[in-house]
Length: 348
Ligand SMILES: [Fe+2]
Ligand SMILES: [Fe+2]
Image (cartoon, rainbow, N blue to C red; front, side, top):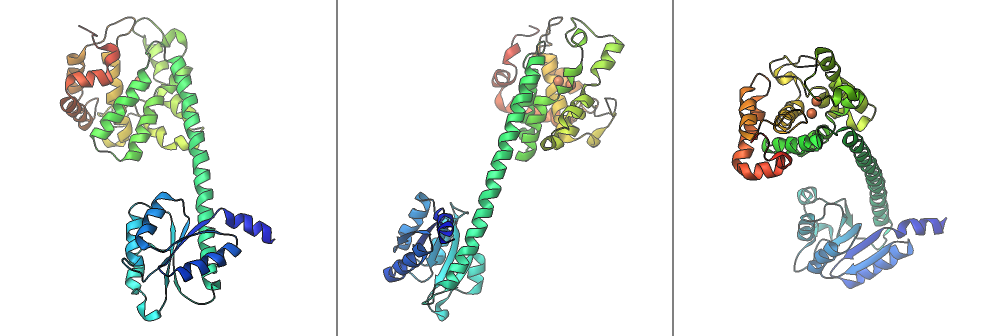
């Protein structure tokens, strides 16, 4: 019993900080007996550096010290470390920091010194419990994000294999969509969503027969009907994996038009999710500027002209504006280098 407790506590390291060395060595001896690793620091300024350089889980910190007090130590440490659990120790009740200060400080516990340390040990034990929970959650999140990234890589490979004629199209649409989303100042999580949706927006095309997908020339009505299924097919494929849930309306909606004349749902305006409106512009940009086996790309000027023509009919004009703003900010040359180097001389 004792042994298992010892091994468990072993993975928790404590720093005890007090300008009175008798206190720190008493605390160290006490908590060592309970199986914790304990380091001592008697200089409050040096304590800040030790937290910066070491991997401590818990700090037992005296309040009244010189040249700086415990609250100032906490303040400094919180500038670079939000994780360490801090228990503030005080000697005399009358000298304790006001409750307001304690509330403002990001500390996990407050302890009035006593010859016996069992109360303090209870406090530390509850910190340990929280620390273990946090560690479990973090490990779980890491496993999840590893699985997520692997899934993305696998599907990316699938798309790439199928993406022969339009080589690299999905990667480029993803890249340009991210650029547009950032230009529009969208929050980071949404930008990431748009990045992944860009990679897989056409994944539904894996169900379209080669004879249609790789056809050297314009499609007849029947063939076009077949192609038009790909946004809904893509949604179907991606919905089998729950972390992709938020991608679904983006993938399903990437061929909707702002005026409601697109497919598959004929949504209009802001009923089309923003991610889909962003990808629609990047998708059309890449489709128009790229060479195909049966036709050359439109070239830069004409592509931009077409996008402008599609303002508020095919496209959300705020996305078109973001594209123009991006070109203006980067300069045409750098923009082309970054987003259409594969086709630089198309149409010239
Ligand atoms: Fe598409
Ligand atoms: Fe596409």
